[in-house]
Amino acid sequence: MSVKDHEFHEDDFLFAHEEGKKLVDQTFKASSYWKDVWGNFKKNKGALIGAIIIVIIILFALIGPSMNEHTYKSIIHGQECLTPRIPLIEKLGIFNGYYKGKDQYAAKGFKDIYYWFGSDTQGRDIFTRVWSGTRVSLVIAFAAVVVDIFIGMVYGLVSGFVGGKVDIFMQRVAEILNGIPTLVVVTLLGIVLKPGVSSIIFALILTGWIGMERIARAQVLKVKEQEYILASTTLGASKFRLIFSEVLPNIFGQVIITSMFSIPNAIFLEAYLSFLGLGVPAPLASLGSLVSDGYKSMTTYPHILIIPVVVLGVLMLCFNLFADGLRDAFDPKMLNK
Image (cartoon, rainbow, N blue to C red; front, side, top):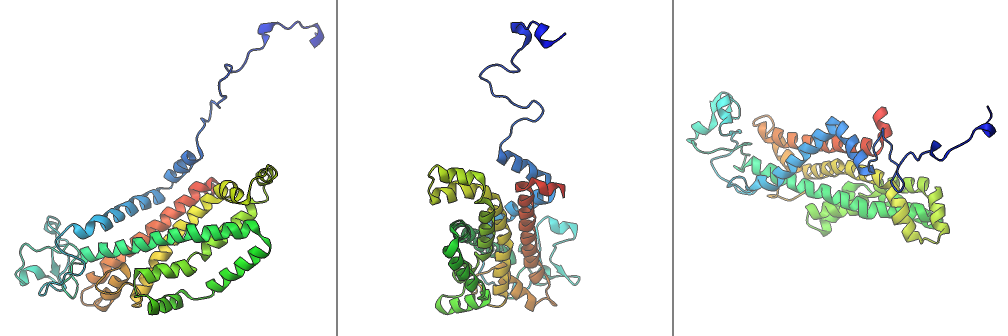
């Protein structure tokens, strides 16, 4: 029987959905982009653990220096080089104040005195100084992110999108700045400014954004030839709107990832400069200066060196794990590799 011979009735065809309602796939529910990012991030257990540890370290950096009566610069003569001693935990045979089989606290007549991370060669509380130093390192890390986003990202966006002679000029300026060693910049700034956090932040402002600028420019060059950019241009969108409303949202994931990877680099830069004596001045503590001080007593009282090294290492490792997890979350194709 041909189609012509078949008689169709009104109820032969029915709508698959009720009129006026949005069609939703019944197998895969609709979800937002950021929900997918969070779902992918949770799959990376290392990144999740790293994020939790970062939050814990930040909390200790905020409240740690006020958890006892000591300050980062208080010196108590007669209580030098005491090993770690923690209440309750000392009953387990660890962190009990013993060093080479001898109770240092009992030998000096200290009964109710506790140094959770021990004391240094000048009688200062290492616990307070470690978390005060962590606070300084986190401030520099936060400054590195701000510099990356507000200088590096904007510079790369404008350079890549405008192109032409403007791009050539801006890239030559970036190459000149990148050719100046950071150590030289910090040393010269130390002549004008007092050595410390301010000189390190100024060094980041001068040269610390070059990596972000290159990433942002490369992403813009890849995106600006897309059809939706041409459509927005045809509709009369200004360059400012194109850059910050069309291009930026499509490269924002890569920008966030790059900025997160800049955090451990900034922390290491501060530690390196403080170790060389170009960082924060005494008695202000940073993780780098604590490592430098502990290095001098490494063979006699290793706890003065080990504790800041462990905190510094864990902090940098966790930020790297966190940044790696963000990279996988913003680029789901990475999960299959």
